[in-house]
Length: 194
Image 1 (cartoon, rainbow, N blue to C red):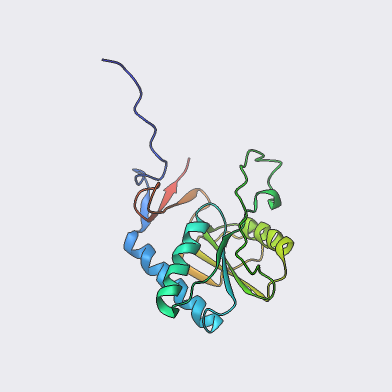
Image 2: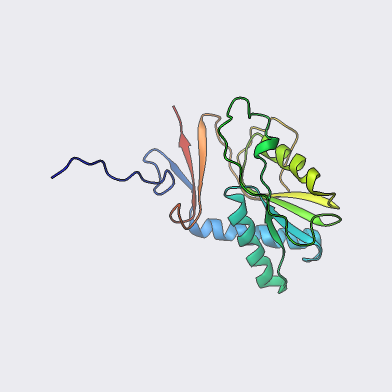
């Protein structure tokens, strides 16, 4: 018999004991469906639409929204990934960020309606970095923002166009998004941090 430590669990695999569940899997599914419909309404269809997910959880969310748009419009909306690592304004304080690949869909972004997709909108600094990164890729006709959770506490004048859930939160609270797959079932929790 050995005293080996059990394997480390994913920090998102189970709700923390002191966390409060904000969205369950059904809530996440409904929020993404609503966001997809709002995007279609605002854009008057799927024409010239491109979804760019901000890694890491924004990318699978963008794919899920595109799947819902395809189910409604029978049009495959191009989906890509927009890495913002080198555009962040906190690299000096947190230099150990691993870059993710930026993947621009065929046809690029010039003259198109680009919807940036992220999991949580907080200070607005990640979105500002995304706008800078997008500027290096081309010149979209319109840029919009879709987020699963808007928790407030903005430090920059940025707002989301499409929101799954507005979640008033304390600055000492952390919002954790789980997506099906490596994180376990879909869900969102609010966790108080010491």
